Image 1: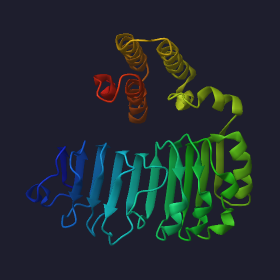
Image 2 (image 1 turned 180 degrees about the horizontal axis):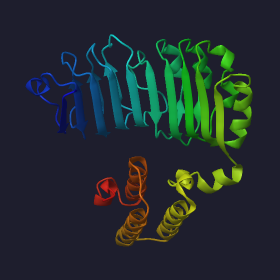
Image 3 (image 1 turned 120 degrees about the horizontal axis):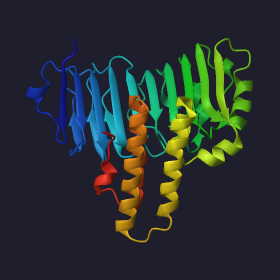
Image 4 (image 1 turned 135 degrees about the vertical axis):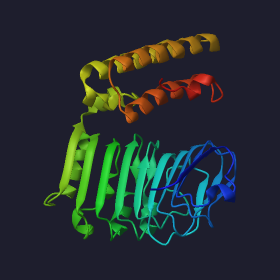
Length: 303
């Protein structure tokens, strides 16, 4: 059984990491997280909002980073190609220092440039999800000679012109595109035509994309019309009211009303962890935009 250590802000001292397999650090206030000599095999850092360097040990098996990742870099080379999970904006491209990843998951980036994949010679699995802006540089996927699994989910502007045919990936065993634009889906079907384990699902029409691109509850239709329509109505109503709000007091009241109504709706429908996080982010995003990062609603969570 793995031993975990969880902390907030400052880096743990060496004595706290003795025999620790998994480190979880929330809201780091440090510039360097040095784990080069630690036994830690799994690292989770969330709430990143400032430049951060993470020095990893040769025994690393997985690292998950969440927040503002544009100024984050990784130092050190693990013995085995581990899992790298990136949640948030990495400045379009990938993090510096993770070319050794064996599995790469990228989520919740406003846009993404995949050209750095051409340097990742050990990559076996690639997952890209929740990127609502352009996903460019897809031609670099062809450089992944070891790639076995490729998955894109909820990406609505994929560089399909540069996407390689499945024949360019000799070790491929799975490729899927789930919840993407219909125009992209049409092209991508030709890229995987004839491959025994390729899938294109839930192609979205232009009308759906126009109506839902900025809707944080766009994918809740899979959980039932009542929940999806209710959350979407609350979101659009709050957005409409905010366009006419001229004072911070009014904007605060509108977002607070949205949070209360959304919480009530979510009580009536069981939600998994992902949906709860999406609900919280919808409120927090409105607060950050209209009230500032320091406002308490920017850190709202679903009770």
